[in-house]
Amino acid sequence: MKNAVLMIPRFFVKHRNVIVEIICYLFILLFVYAAATKLADFQNFRIQLAKSPMLTEIAGFTSVIVPSLELIIALFLTIPRFRIVAMYASFCLMVMFTAYIYIIITYSPHIPCSCGGILENMGWSEHFYFNIAFVLLALLGILLLSGKGSSYNTEKAIHKFSLSHK
Image 1 (cartoon, rainbow, N blue to C red):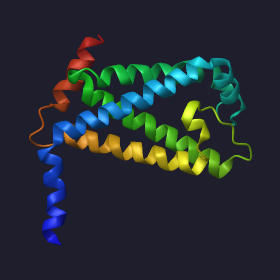
Image 2: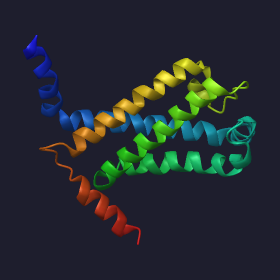
Image 3: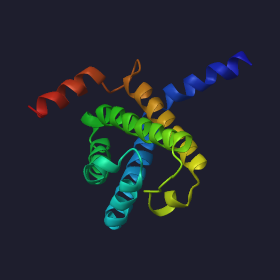
Image 4: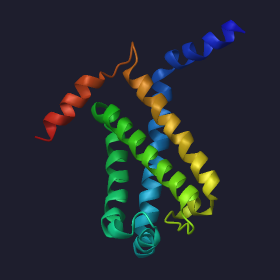
C-alpha cells in the first residue's frame, strides 16, 4: 500500500509537462467556450446577471469583465512565460465562481442562470462540483509549475509579467 501512495507523486513528477499541458488545454477550452457563449448571447447574459441579488448593481461591468478575463487568461495559458501567472488567475477566477455559486445556492431565494451552452444544462450542484474539480486542477497545475525540478520559475515569470505591464 505504501508503494502505491508513493507512486502517485512520482507519476505526476515524471509526467509533469504533459499533465500541465493537459490542464492548460482544459482551462483554455473552458474559458474560451464560456466566454464565447456569454458573448454570443450577451444581452441575455447581462440580464441574467442583473437578476442576481449579489450582482444587480454591477451587472453591466461584470458582464463585460468576466468574458474578457476568461479570454485573457486563456491567451496567457498559451504563452509559456505567462503560464504560471495564468494558472494563478485561473485558480482565483474558479474560486470566485465557486464561492458565488455556493452563496447563491445557500442564501438566495432566486437563482438566476447566467451560464450558456452545455454549462446551462447543469444543475447548480453539478455546476458547483464541476467548478471544484477545476479549482483542484488549477491547484495541481500551480504545484506542478512551481514544484522542484519544474522548467517554470514562478518568481521569474511573475517578475517578467509585472515588468511587461509598467
